[in-house]
Length: 58
Image (cartoon, rainbow, N blue to C red):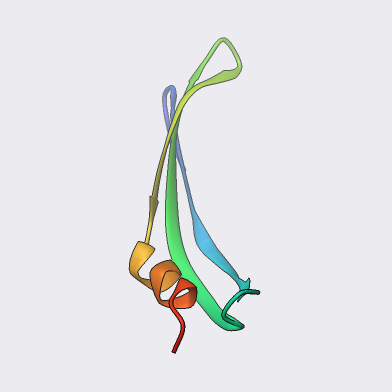
């Protein structure tokens, strides 16, 4: 999704953390500012609770 020089991307990260063997899926949003055809800045939002749960041993 874009609005002038701002672009937003939405999706999900997924994987298994090898140290705990725990799977996770976490939603994300990336917000970019594009200037002169190049990414000038990027902000990432992610459901860090889901990532943290995968990092912690049961």
